Length: 333
Image (cartoon, rainbow, N blue to C red; front, side):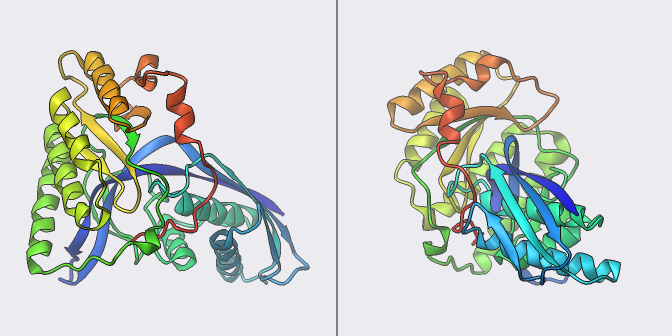
């Protein structure tokens, strides 16, 4: 028996903080910025005669992937009324590690899907989410369909579906530094004032999604990024926001547990291509590497020149994939 699975990545968050669920309980939760392109691929070949813990992974050292495979094999066997077994797991991918793009979650979800496929079992997204959280303690909502959701990353559950899609925006991606060990970041405490502030941002984001308001999306993302600076303290964050103001971006977004960032533009902004080139030059001159330019909406066409906005066009795609694989440091705070 063999199966395959795939999972995408994301480009950090639009909003992350602490929110109240429907029962009035505090939950750490986030809204990610989906991105097509890089992803993780997994192949699982089951060995019916092997014990469920007898698992081999290539490349070696992917402990979260192994845990996900074992948990999924047990879950699928339970659902089918059969005995779980071990096997061989192979992972490939092109997601940069430690930048906050969900490399670890992408690996885990690809593995869950590959093992389920090998067992001939279709697992619903909520089951995949629960397995992902058990495998890595916290998970990004990459098992969902890309709709904007408020997702409790340590519980693996959707607190709220915000709408069908984020407002249309063009994102100039960049990196504010090298890989980050997110487990080393100090824990952030949140008081009542913080909870109220996040509730206001969530209300604004609901409105942005309902009205397709790109400017309001940028406002929420920037406010959330500023609050994250209490912990992240990116040295060039103020430079990033200054550049955004100078080139007419509607705001900035960051990975709240990494270094990837993006400047958000309205796709209908006058002189958009000039603004994108100007943005790339300003980032480059300030030592902030441009990675790639993409959109939040599949209805916005991406001309080829949008993906080569740095001074060296060939550097844009390759700078994102300078490091590949899964990150043992990608657990969500």
